[in-house]
Image (cartoon, rainbow, N blue to C red; front, side):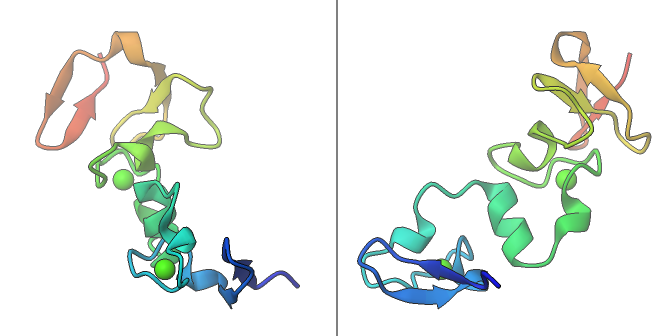
Length: 98
Ligand SMILES: [Ca+2]
Ligand SMILES: [Ca+2]
């Protein structure tokens, strides 16, 4: 069972403390190198990941979906992966597949 995260200073905190936007390690290492997708996971919001809607300031929730290749985005509502170069429209926080 690996349910804890080891801080840079050797301290252990709950795995849910990693990337929850609260500093739990005395040295702040639990919040370093976190993407927005990591934050969503820590909040049990995995349904927001790869749902075709941009929830993250850094797009990380839609950037690397496990069934898409690197460099592809997922289409809104369809869960189909497309090349980023084919994206033409970005409106209402969603991408349109063209
Ligand atoms: Ca934290
Ligand atoms: Ca999303």
